[in-house]
Image 1 (cartoon, one colour):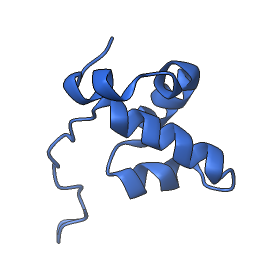
Image 2 (tube, helix red, strand yellow):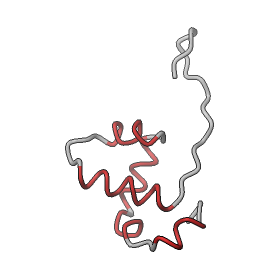
Image 3 (cartoon, one colour):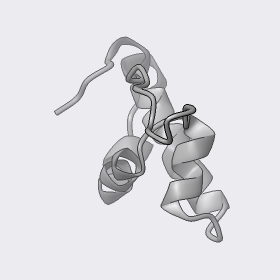
Image 4 (spheres, one colour):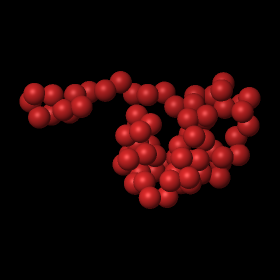
Length: 75
């Protein structure tokens, strides 16, 4: 968000769960015309985050439903 000063206001980091990562991958596959920038805006994350997620797309698409709900950070 841009404030009156023209500088970006700090935003709270969004915690991504594996379900979110999987959804981002599925969205990217279903909408090949969307840029990473657009996908990031829709999901409320940085563009670089989308890039990192899509680099490991096979990993995120293969995560089971039970596992992904419990894991927020997976390195």
